[in-house]
Image 1 (cartoon, helix red, strand yellow):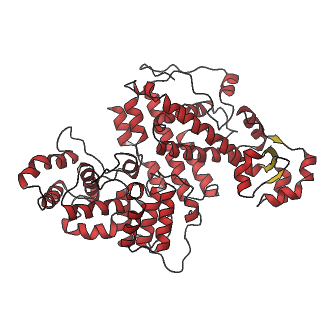
Image 2 (image 1 turned 90 degrees about the vertical axis):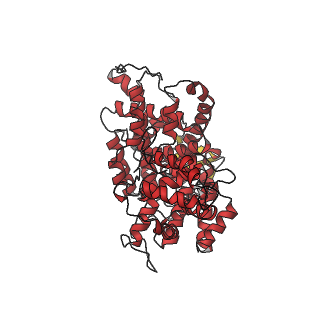
Length: 509
């Protein structure tokens, strides 16, 4: 792709050429786009793709993947964002073109670290799985052929011959569905996941895979190709970084957050300094409890800690005057006298409130920003405890929060799987005695607001024994399959109504 500053000349193709460019509603993204686009369109497509993947991620946490609610909501959101999703729709060229180009833009932004690559691969796989699930059966073979996947369907006679063997191995699969669906004969080495789960019939080095399970094999191939492509893109990154137009934009995209900014707004002045110790124990996420405790004990925090905690306090409602008073009272208990505080620290506090420098009104850090940027070093207390703490130290902190051993083990399992936000959400559930999956955690200030809502009666506490009220809510064991970087607010509907002022504002500057 090239990015001229002038307005892009629209690609003009005849009907047959348009169909040949993007024959299907889903793609393996084997070839990068070659047309010229403007920087303006580059930015727009990047934002829209990011919105789409954040939606995929949030729905994957809120609903059981593949359920009717999940499918319906995801289709609705894809339609709103004008990306391709259904094979039968007329003239989907523009939607498929947007899908193709935007995928490669995010490859550039998300190839820069292992965490970013892992997040992108997971969301793209979930999106691909959804699109494949609604691909008409008569289009599957054409798609496999166009994607260079040679999966042979067995004949009717062979299908009847192995009827019982395949039926017994592929649970749940009804006889009627078996008769209607195709069965694929693939090399054993391509079906290792199904074999590992004892979900496939094997004979003479081949796996006989019903249509309902073939997506597992296709997804493995999709993951392998995308993972390799991201690694190659990362090697080529220096040439992209030399373009001063693109590098700042790509850096911002990779750490951007598209949900609510949780700035103080209507909460200003509603929190008193006397309440902070009590609120820290009841309603602060573990990262902010850690910072609050360190500040009270050592009467000092380094810059990273002051920024993370200071903006959090601003978001829950501390005014500038309260913030200056709070930090000053705490620092002068340590080695900082009044004069040094006024000269060295007060300016930074006023700056974070938009009263100094370029007058930017900074917003609190999201979970994604805390997890992916500025890791703590020796003597620091900022960062995400689930991401940056030693497992033994984290275990001690969880024990001090009076969490049961079973709950601690569940949290540590999430941490081992690099699902840090799910670990934090589990911490919320256990410390507040609520059901799993009541909201999708993505921001420390969201944690605080949900906690306050619960404690004030806005949410119901779990009653023993109980059953989840939301039938499609994801169970704990299923949560571990989700991405580490979940970063949408609790309500999907409210998320999608929110604009992206921070990101779009950055692009417009």
